[in-house]
Length: 486
Image (cartoon, rainbow, N blue to C red):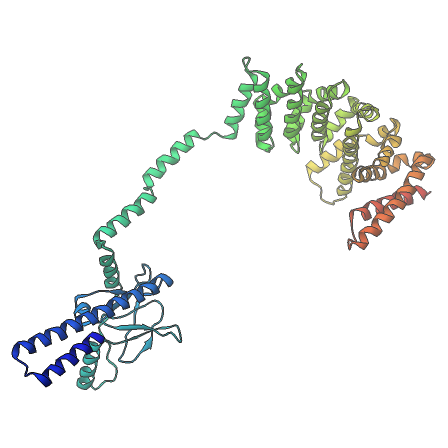
């Protein structure tokens, strides 16, 4: 503008001194037109840089699109770039500034500005659009006439042209990329058939493991690994039954007689998992002599790890199986457990043995209580008959368990004391007379009452009204109360 003013001043002065000629007038006009074009170009570059900054700060900012008309007349042709959305709403401006909402496109030739006070973008019609607006208003007598609009397809085409992308080529590439992410249904079906051919069922895996275990060329390490994998599968009831019906259970039982301790331990572990809560396998194991071999492992000198696994298998076999419990008593199993309990190295197994005895006593009492049901089924009557043949409590009193179980009360473990107290209460009908004569038991109960009363107070201070120590104290008080009864 400064340069434009200086030229104008010079020309004015020249008119005062010298009479202008035609060539001078043409030169003056040419300079004026050149100056106007340069000023328009500077304004256009400045506006492009300003809008570019807005685009970097806001993903939904307006993008200036240069057009031949804008370069000649110094006007801005704008459109809204809102990602790849194809559902843009077109904003219809008037000759006054109006706020542009996010997600709206604007017609070609509209003027856009950023209101620095409100931070909002505002739009109004361009100069040529205002002229059309006024003419249309005079002709039609309307105050508001919508300017030219663009739809979503045109906006998308403009974007592709700006980025130098052919719309047709872009659509093809998108379709090909989409197809590459997915597979036809026929190919998927073929892949599924291949997977089915490669997948093994549990039965096939067990058959392979049993063959590997039974192979004469297999090393001890390979057999131990096969048993370890087999133990994982026989937790399922059906798998354990399939193992028994196919002869695999017999192979595992025969491994109990192996001279290698690792095979004995692994075989006992497999049996314990297969026998747990599985009546079919329990009956099969009793009839095949599994109980005798497990008791042999417990009765003879063996490492503690083997005895733990063997005791686990015995507990799984006896739980909820009166048929196995009856054979256990006939085979002298109670005596075997008593010898382990009295041995110096049986400390870790004592609580497990007491737990087995308590479960056997409690099962019979529970089945007798449910026998009061007025409509028992045939299977329930059969279980009642089988439990009636299990005479456990008289044998416990006869073999000295009335004095063995209270020994756990001297243990520092609270869990051991709890299990001992529950077993003492369960044995009370047959051991009450002997308990009253045991002064060591009476003094031990009194000392435990004082200890757990203090522990209960500590729990209450911490806000635990019904804590674990309170349960143990209740058991102690119940035992003391029953001992005082006549």
